[in-house]
Image (cartoon, helix red, strand yellow):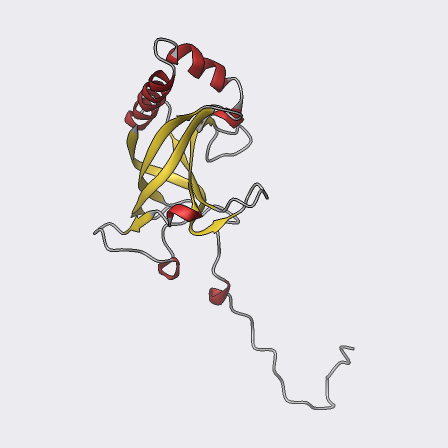
Length: 187
C-alpha cells in the first residue's frame, strides 16, 4: 500500500549512502519521519498499515496489527521517544530500501534530482516522502515500509550528528614565523 507523507521532518536520514546499520551484511538507504498524531499523514499511515495487514491476513488484519504493535521491532510506525525533544509526543515512521534495489528517488522542490553534495535533504529538514507499506510473514513477521522517494520541502534546524560536511569546517591559521621571541616549545 503506497503512502505519500507531506511536510514531515526527517531524522536519521541516510538516503544518499546505504549503510549496514544492523551489521548483518544488508545495506539500506533509510530515514525516519516525525509525524504529528492525528494528522492527515498519521491517518494515511494507519490506513495503509491496516490495509496491508488485512491483505495478508483476511478478516484478521486488525488483530494481527495489534499483535505487531506490541513490539517496536515488528512495525514501521511507533511512538516517538519522550527523551527526544523532536519526537516526544509524536510518531516515528521508519522506511528503508535495500541497496540492491537502487537509491530512492531524491528531488528538490522543483523535482530536479539532488545529490549528497547539494546538502539536502538532511536530518532536521522537512520533506515529502513516498513509501510502500507491506506486511512481512515468515520468521520475522511485521509491517514494514520501503522507501521509494523523497522531495525536499524546506529547511529545518539540523539535528546534531546529522551529517555536517567536514569540508565546511575551518580552523584558524596557526602558521607563524619561526622566531625565538615568544615561541614556545610545543613538543
